[in-house]
Image 1: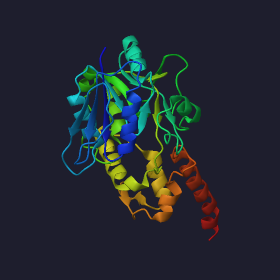
Image 2 (image 1 turned 135 degrees about the vertical axis):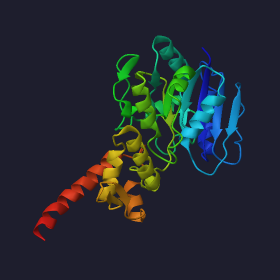
Image 3 (image 1 turned 90 degrees about the vertical axis):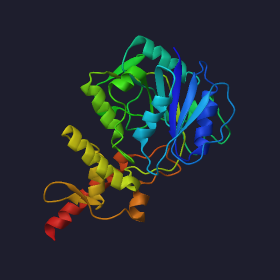
Amino acid sequence: MTVSVCTLAHGRADHLANLVRGLSQSRSMPAELVIAVMQSDAYALPEIDFPVRQVMLKGDQICLAKARNAAAAAALSETLVFLDVDCIPSPDFVADYAAAMSEEGGVFMGEVGYLPSGATDRGIDFAEFERQAVLHSERAGPPQSALGPCRDYRCFWSLNFALSRTTFERVGGFDERYVGYGGEDTDFGRKLAEAGIPIWWARGAKAYHQYHPHHMPPVHHLDSVMRNSSLFCDKWGEPTMQHWLRAFRLMGLIDRDSAGEWIKLRDPNEADLALTRQQEDQPFASSAVVLAQLEAAAADRAPEMATS
């Protein structure tokens, strides 16, 4: 089985270089690395022993769906493994996915460990990564056996997954109408569910997520989350990203109009960014933590409003 590893990149040159260095230490080498480049210049990358091809995308908009589709179209292998640019694959990453796909059909999601700030300062050290990495509190842990069924399509996560080209083409890839941040993963998962294609959690196929500042809920992508949420609802007849929208409403950023549609009230300010910003002592940002704080604050205000 030959494997094409696919990623997409905009900026993040150091992260991409670490992804390449990590992949070069694979116990089973991929046939190639395909990079969908969402910027005007190609990347200068470390020298490695397998082919790397950079697919240059045109246009000013960041469309993750379009980039994933472009990488898949350019890949030469029947087996496609997608890994986000801010991740470093473990030495068994490629081999674990190949083994999983020899056992079952469908879509497979490997493990992810989140690294703290500074974890990569001394280079690629997998023993140290494993010591420092933590699981995301809002993501499922690895299954007890080699594979475990994921029964909720909303859990599909494009950060680290694998499937056959045949499966990718069967569902039509990612919907390129989702521009910016949010929605395209859940839409892809819904398409898998509609097609009866199983989604599996895979033990192994581990990637280490490199630290970078982030916001959760993603207030810095407020406009695209609202737009993509509306697109998903129009397409499938049900909402998505409701926890983010609930947080935005509690923050006073959005509200419902008389027809029940979400409308934007204002742009995020520094206080909103400070509330949602991942701190350097945190390996990941947590929507659940912020939403709990907002819900608690709203509950505290409720008695005051009732007596005022």
